Length: 378
Ligand SMILES: Cc1ncc(COP(=O)(O)O)c(C=O)c1O
Image 1: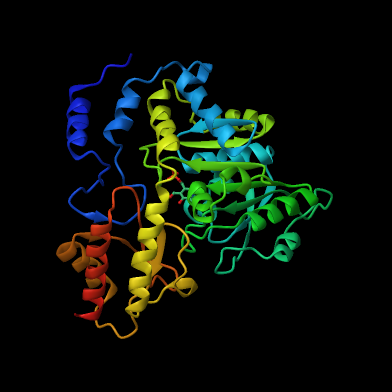
Image 2: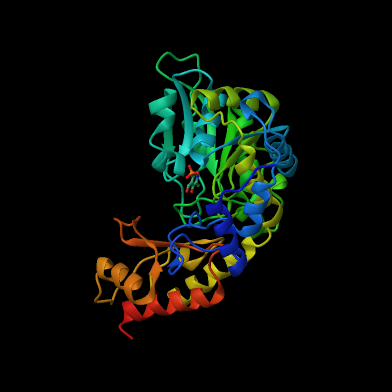
């Protein structure tokens, strides 16, 4: 049994008192991301009691249990625990491509294309063929087909993989439907390439559409899933797919420095998150929709005419406002203790807010009032 340090015990005591997850900046309404939550007392207790071993030697029972649980939950043969979503995506690309000078076809606003340090090219020698998605985060199938190149032509890198993202973060937490996911998986198969989904928030997509993650991804070869987003774990992601894919991803994980030893300490919290925090994502979605509809009614710009599928909302200030973006963000923090992120899309005009398990209805109302009051000078 693992012993807990005095600092850890004090943290658990404090969390016990609040009996809920809190944000990193606990006095604030922190809507910057769903990654800011701290583990709950129950989650930390699970970590203290986890059965541990050396996972590089395949001996950590908690990691093995998590991997089995996630493979089962998603209907895939096998799973691999990794520290981050970024490593999960890169290990997936390296596993599927397996040789340098491959091509992947991917959305131009995807997290892999924008925010993962160009790892596919920088570290993997894999070229990205980027396609502009529509506002509902769909790539046109004809654009995809036009970007698939065969090995036979010396002019081309061999196209090996089609990547999707569900939910799609940068276009507003868009939930891709099962029909589109299946169509994309089948298109990839028809062209003898593999399909991967960055499913950092795949359970948000599933819950929002009342389908299982299994159903959503049945025609997709591999998925990366994060526990450290809406599910509230402090660290951890998993890759799922067939056994050969996972075997090669495990080799890639080692090359990337992601072979962890007593990783059950964190895997236990991920397992806890997967077993307890999926259904509650619905609350985050309801709160995101609440704030989006208030903002739209108050004259703010919302992409997709205000349609919000999950827990991410992008918005622009009303056209008739006098306040600058910088002043708005500063005053929102100093006067309304509300944090959000600025500088997205439309030439950096949009703000982003994300609901999560550290935010309740009262905080959403307070944040909405603050945003509207500042922009409308009420
Ligand atoms: C859609 C998506 N994929 C992947 C990641 C990367 O996850 P990590 O920060 O764990 O590397 C993120 C992070 O926010 C994300 O939003």
